Length: 394
Image (cartoon, rainbow, N blue to C red; front, top):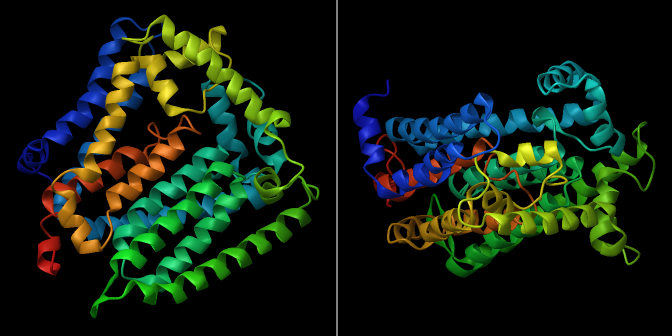
């Protein structure tokens, strides 16, 4: 049972209070001048803060290892949703109907069918391909560096399955991120060595495992490619996988002719103009939703910094990034790095920062506050009382 003492202990850490101020309290204060007030969006922000607090308290009570096992189960559920939405999208029709009706629409299934299914892109339980891809990566941020840091073959299985799921979503950003994430792990382990159950060993011993991981990745890509091309609702050259590979590796591909990229760049130009209209305080809480409804902005910026600056001003948006960059280099991070042989916070922040400049859903994804809370407990409370890292040679 979680008691007030656990809450008080968690709130005694200054970065915890600062996170709540930057991502919850100040955004709610901007309701004073936002052009659009909706209780639903206020609830989203409060729920965001509650997830952050409950996660931290739970880990303090039961330890980071038990929490990681819950995340592993959550990851498995997310992967299941992605696979089902790709091969049997009709299962999600009722969900799409409720989702569209809650937004005031009537042509419900077309939202998912046109945006995702007709492009042969899996969308999972998140009902949106990019969100599903981001969710997979956020789970990996917890599982791979920490829970599976000394379980190398289990890590290969999890990374291989995740790689295949991201390919099904057709997310180019997700594809690049998981490849970069794997490279960062390899670099750290090659440089600093590996911590195994038998003790510390040379980083070069990781080479065979990463060769296996590379082979698994190639086989998964080939399998997904063959399956997606044969799927009845798509044609060769229009599958989720070929979309990724053509845009990243084809000599015929050009950014100038990519309608998706050009639409995002044009939207970002508009965002910059609107940000400069109110650069200090922004337009207010969830004002992007109102802006898209009124035509003040054309569509999402696909850039988290622009979204934050538009809603809450450049100072707050910049402060959010400074906060994230502080965590990997704080004094407490050295002890975590010593134990795991790499800095999991630095890997997290690197991935988040890359993601935020190609997506506008990173910070509002429900996994984000849980991930930050997890790492704050790792940094400032040694992973919680029950399975403290200090009891394992931390």
